[in-house]
Image (cartoon, rainbow, N blue to C red; front, side):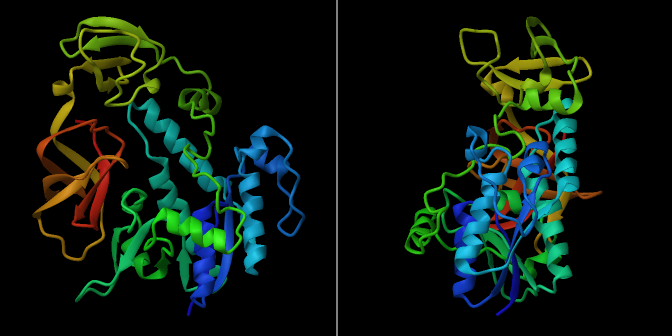
Length: 370
């Protein structure tokens, strides 16, 4: 058995992960990653101090992370495992900078993927090495399975196809795969909740988080204004022929594929097909105009050894996207070309494209401007 550092978010998945790791005989240490936000800092106590009382509605909802830290600590206490809550404000600040930069560049960011790359499988591994741990673990619904004639395990979809999170894990460094555990990956969500209920864990019925952790109100534009100051990004809504059909208050309020909230109506549905930050124009068009047969991606991360230069696969262009059959080609400078058998809708620059061989993650990259 191994010494394991487990990222504990205060939710049921990481709580059940702690339970499963203990049952398997591992020596577990829980780590809660504080974002270092003003609200969190104001409420937080020292590492060994008593947990604060959380009287306000905002705290009860976990918007600043303090109630989540409290839940994580109480689960750790119930399972008798060491627990640390450390500030990672530099890492979270880097993610916030990335988020604002991408939206202001007219792209659609994916902060969850970047959090996994920089924090959960970056800083978490650094901390594990500092305390002499051999493994790190998270509550992601994904699986690491042995592959014949390969020195490292492969990254595969979680057993629960509705909760599978392998898409957001494509950026993990290949060298770390042999040091990672996903305890809940072989279970369904309901099985995990039942395990937590049977163990009497306080997080058993806790709802899943539906928002970005540093934007609990889900208002991206307001966050950018708070983070960067008011932005002069208003401009024109135009059709694909360049005709002006309306005005908008800021292009950061839009993403490729968006249908609702355009502020204009037509006889048939219209979608955002392109965002032009230089001219501040948001281009809208029909569903046919939204479709893309091919995309190009940068910063490809390969999770298989010796990938072929061209191969058949399926690919996802966002977390909830149905995997689409395609042909993938390697390009110079860590780039990919993905050609779909049929047009895909909502190909958004800044989002990740993740390539699969069956249930195995082959590689992924960042969709480039077309």
